[in-house]
Each structure stands twice: as structure tokens, then as C-alpha cells.
Image (cartoon, rainbow, N blue to C red; front, side, top):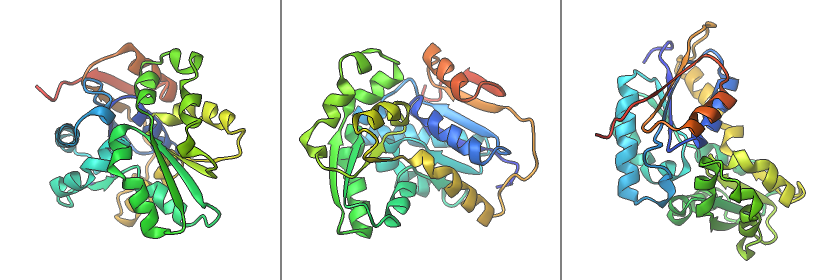
Length: 268
């Protein structure tokens, strides 16, 4: 690993762009290599074995790109494939998920008493947030709700998401009654954070990994002397397994310049 090597980030689609944007904001000197597995999105409704297999193949791809760190910018993959990825790389590169930054934040917030979690089926049914939270804070009540339609509709930029009140119908579920905070357990969900905040009239704290992961990555790179200190004009390189105009549009929204976008089918 060298400081000049890129940071690898992957997700099933556009959700990880929120993580890539957060990383770029905190670490503007770092080059990003991003892989969006648009061929298999969303991961949330896939079997554990498929998510693990897809994730390992993407990690192989990012290792070939000489990434010094790999960020699993997907809650579903973070929930069920993190350990396999860590074992795969064997300390060859740093590995980050999008769950631990949230848990670390919660551990310092004593005012949180009843926390809600929304995410894909894979993330919610893994029970990973409840397990991790109760390991550090047994006094916190955790109420989890699978919201399987959201990621796909956000990915497709489907107007039904807003016109038919799908967001509100999930948030009105009794499982989320009387929560004081809400974890956005999917990296797609920051794209609808405004609508969620409006629903709660900003009276519920919204917790998302993208608010903390940039600093977390920076601290670990600094600790291992892997921070790229010099300002460069490198172009971030974005890959997708299946090219879509919506991915291109969203990429330009977060990275309006200095990127290369191309299709790369690593699964054939």
C-alpha cells in the first residue's frame, strides 16, 4: 500500500455515491475508484450467498486497481459480507463498512433512548444494528423496519416514491412509534433525507453513515501513514457493471467534473 494509491468504494448502485461524495469532501486529495454493481441491484433482496459472491468479485477488481482501502458503501453488503472481505484481503488493504461509524456515533450520545432503523431486507433481517447497538448500550430500545421498496425506487428515480406516499407509509408503521432517532440503514436513503425530516418535523434525529465515515477513513489512513498529502488533478474513475443513464446523471450531480465513467462486466 502506498499513499498515492486510490480509495476503492463499491455499492449495488447509486447509493454509494453519497459515501463517495462524503469521502471526497473530507479527503479531496484522494483518488476514488468506484464500482456500482448496477447489474445486480438492489442487493437487499438477494440471498446472503449472492451478496457475498458479488462483493468478493468486486473486491478482487478493486485490488487489481491497487486500492489502498476498500469501503463497503452498502449496508446489505456490510451486514453479510464484511467478515468475508476482511478475510479475503488478509490485511493487504484497509477495509471499512458503513455500520461501525454509526455505532461509534451512537455510543457517545447518551440522550438516545429509542432508536429506529430502516433498511433493506438483508440489512434488517441480519439484525446487525440491534446486535451492535445493544453490545455498547443495553439501555437503548431498537426498533427495526424493513423498507424494501425504497432503494429500488430511489435508484430508478421513480416519481411514485413521492406521489403515492410510500415514504410516509413506512414511517407511519407502529414499529417506529415514539422513536427519538432514526438510522438510515441504506446509503440510498440520504437522497430522501429531506422528506424523512419533513415527516418528523425535524423532531427526530436522523443518523446516517455519510456524516461520519469520511472522518473515520481519514483517521485510519493517517494512522497508517497512507494519507495522500499533495494536491492533485487526478480524475476519479467510476465503473458500473451495467451502464444506465440514471447512474450517469446521479454521478454528475455528486461529481460534476473530473471523473471517468465506464462499464466493466466483471461477473462474466
